[in-house]
Image (spheres, rainbow over the protein chains, first blue to last red):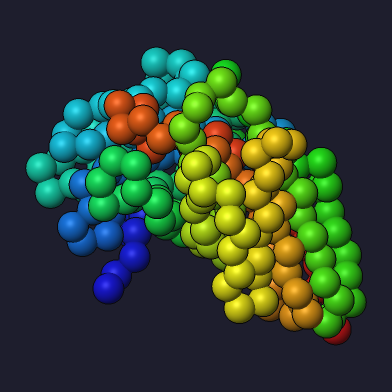
Length: 112
Length: 117
């Protein structure tokens, strides 16, 4: 069974640009969550989607947004990139709400 | 607000030694879940265990064991007879158990374990 797939694995952008990251959950999983991991702040929750609806949102500025499609695939978008957005972005999926989450390998975003 | 504290930032052991990772949590919720994840250098977070706040029984899975003590708000993780492949960063995490709360995880800062041959 394929795991959570995140694309791309690596991305380099410059300040002011925008970026879209993609996440394909494990087949049959309906919940997708996104996390940001940085050396300074650790792992922080961004948002969670279930059945195309955002259920939870972390404490991040409006530049961070996401969506989920009918096939449960999810994308997150960051606009007007800042140096501090450099991080590993991890996507996790679970079968349903309140089920253990399984993570992808992440997308490492570097802002120059 | 929820908080997870992993006081040990890095632990270095020699292969075959036991290593215990500490995790202390804070929550106002009466029902919650506790987790441990392993993050090898590749970056992926590997799910190890989930415990419900009502279940304080200790659990053993191979060389891994977990000690949940609600009285001290701790959920410690022990690797017995460590191996080089155990080298990774280990995260303890907490989530509310109410379905309405969704799957939001609050993570500790992580403990880097280095197992030397």
